[in-house]
Structure formats: C-alpha cells, structure tokens
Image 1 (spheres, rainbow, N blue to C red):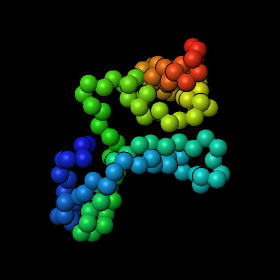
Image 2: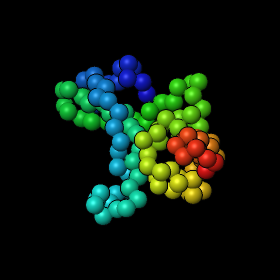
Image 3: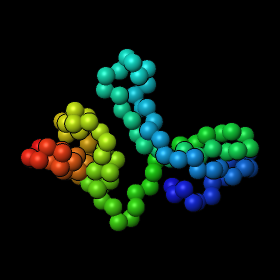
Image 4: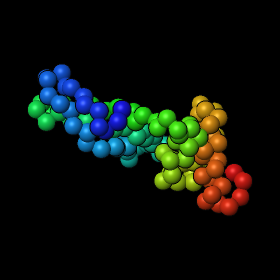
Length: 110
C-alpha cells in the first residue's frame, strides 16, 4: 500500500497515511519478553471516526527480497541479525540480506 493511494474508511471518511511504525507482534509485554518481534506497518487513520488500520508496506517492484531485508533490518542489533540467520523459518533471500548486513558491519563473512 502506498501512502498516496486513497483509502476509504467503513464510516465513509478518507483514511490518512500517518507514517510507518514498528508493531510489536508476539503478544507479551515488552518487559517480559527477551526475543521481542516487530513488524513494520503503514498506519492509516480516519480523521472522522478515529479508526486506525495497519497494512504491510508494499515492496517496490525493483527491490528484491534480499534488498528489502537489508533495508528492513538495517537498524537491528548484531544479536538480532544472528537470531534471524539461525531461524530456519526465514526465506533464503532474507538470510542472504542479513548475512550481507553482518558482513558490512563486521568486515568478515557471517
């Protein structure tokens, strides 16, 4: 979903793009969870009824999954990046992007 596309609320109002946020996804309070997971979402708000909707950001057509992973995890800690590499549920392209980030930061193969 792009920020310039008009979205209609169920009340009839026009949803306004409010920015991109990291959404806490694992259901535990922050202070109780050591492996907190976040997902980037685009936030839309209806100024008429104050309804809020979240959408996963669209990937630019020219951006690969590997490039997207590098952009998405650019601010992640080394520990978080290594946890992603160790998780077999992530696709190989994401692992490649995360590996490239680690190599850029450490200067040696991850």
